[in-house]
Image 1 (tube, rainbow, N blue to C red):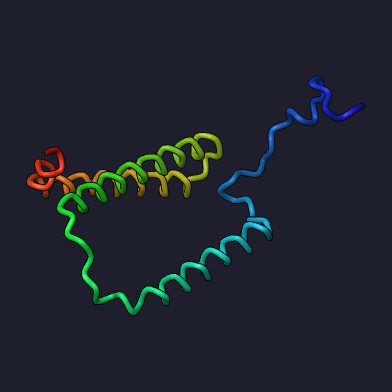
Image 2 (cartoon, one colour; image 1 turned 180 degrees about the horizontal axis):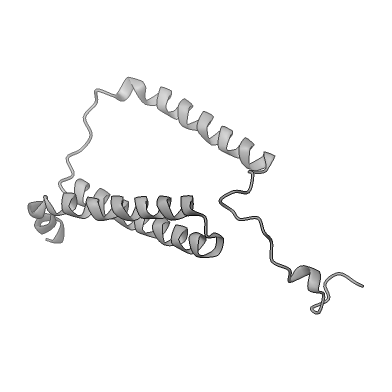
Length: 121
């Protein structure tokens, strides 16, 4: 039968391969290697400026912690969804780790209450 048919059952069949255990394609490996090399080059280019102090930003730590917590919560959410689909215990452990780290970062963020007042003003 023709491809693109909405009634074609071959396109509706579920795959037994989950993202957590699927091997990365060659293009993804090359892209990751290129990103690593670019990061190394950028790091080496910035070494001469290591002793130059940056500007003082009082709200830096709370803002960093907030973005850290939110990104880890999003990652944990995606991994919990991945666990519900794959039922792989390793994915559940990884999701729990992301959730734990995001919950531990909240008290660290709250140790800077003066910074929150300054950032709000």
